[in-house]
Image 1 (tube, rainbow, N blue to C red):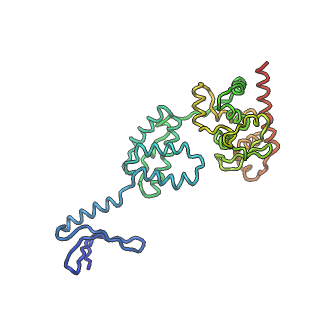
Image 2: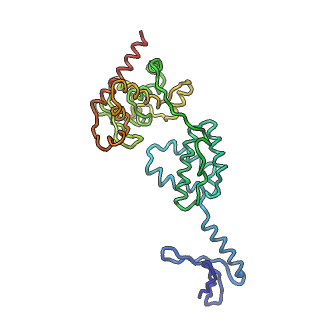
Image 3: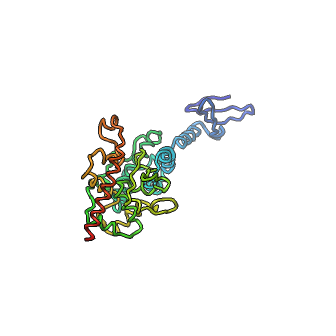
Length: 330
């Protein structure tokens, strides 16, 4: 026999005469009963206090690392093919704050952590901020938080605003790249000859080549892409367990360039490809070569592949490089 008190607290009378405080709650049509203690050892006020503690523990926010792991499983593992950078950002949040309930994180401690990160890697700190905000947005949507802890924090507060890069390689730098003998040089030359992103060429394998066409297996946009294989590109290919290029991380390549005090990055090779192509081809061909979506309504109505124009663009870039090398050798 049960006598209701409040908040799901009941005094249960057993046939033996024992009286027990229990908490009853209903989930999915089924009752769950939790023992609080015996009466009269626990008076009414004490039983209510113990129930309040139990309910507080039951509804306590999960630890930050648990939310990070849940977000990773639901959003990252299913959608991200390249998880290297975001795994760094997730690990940073887990390592620094994983032991704390997520609703106890403060703007100040999170921002201080990101500012320390920005001292050595300002751009990465800005990317990390954006990724953390996605996790906190997920936590709000999941009911773990009422408000996110970084609502008004911006890149200006953390790593500073990022200036738009406009670097393209000079002829002297192109010639120097073709003279270079370090292990990453073939990959870098391939980036200039194709306009690909570094991760795209690093994933390319010999099985992706069909005649004079290299099909790009992994793209940032997840749209199918291919590039024309000129003779100048083909000589850059090696064999690294089936891959065309030495499969090192993009970060390792960038670190090598920094050690050389290079003023350009791997992505600047993509910009250089587009700039050289613009000498002979209209903008829509450049967009297709870079696997960009055509602007405006062209993306809907113009479904032409521009295959021959794209092949010619690759030949034009190769010819430009050959001319630079020839001129430098004279």
